[in-house]
Length: 299
Ligand code: NAD
Image (cartoon, rainbow, N blue to C red):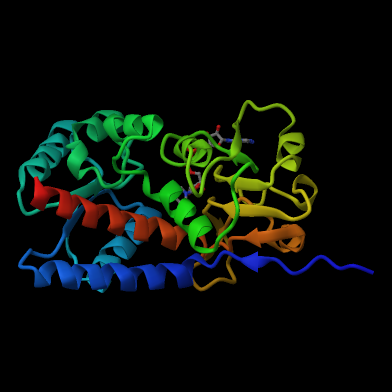
């Protein structure tokens, strides 16, 4: 009787450490040529626990690869004007190569206006319309960190994508939509036929069952069950939700969009949560910052 081979793990944690080593070597070479270390700034507004954790990881990763980093912390009641002034200040600061404004922002802040105020050449999150437009046209620019990290994951683990049917669930401008563009563009990884599903998609299960590559970026814990996944599929779980759990040390556990235990046995490749897409997002941000520093020095 033939048995399905066990799934291979798309280990973002391990891969991200190897890529950080590569970036650290590049930084050593760069500073050895007389340049200053790349410098990333992160603006964090308010006290959201998850956002604080993400920004802490980003700052610690900067130290790990030899970047300089600056945290700009502001209370949740900051005005739109004050936040715009901070963005303009970072745009003008010659010692900052790239910066991010951690999302989500409080409701009284117009997040789109803040994103659009960022100098596209310092927009290392790749959220500015200029960078999204460049991505759509296949032109050089900063690619949003999470989809870029997933592409690197597929590339480094040599997961074939050419001609495959990829189904992306979620159409946000920072994950699902750029992911669908990257998978469909001409290149390796790429050349997929892409279906983009979202909250108004009818019969999600039927679409998912067509997927050779399934990317779940919704934020609904364990919504992807085994009966939604084709045998042998590649499954990438972007979702991260804090689910209350009194038995856990921190009082919560992180859950992905995929019911891992039941889905994994059907997969050829699968990402764990945590340790899959999350760490890859951070290395993409570091990579974008290094690119920004080099582009600035050459301008
Ligand atoms: P979002 O809320 O902006 O978008 C969610 C998308 O899911 C929407 O486009 C919506 O149409 C779709 N959706 C909602 N309900 C659906 C349903 N029932 N069926 C199909 N589609 C549905 O979220 P986002 O910013 O794109 O993030 C998605 C998830 O990924 C979240 O859990 C977030 O925390 C996580 N995330 C992880 C990383 C990482 O580094 N691992 C980075 C960014 C986001």
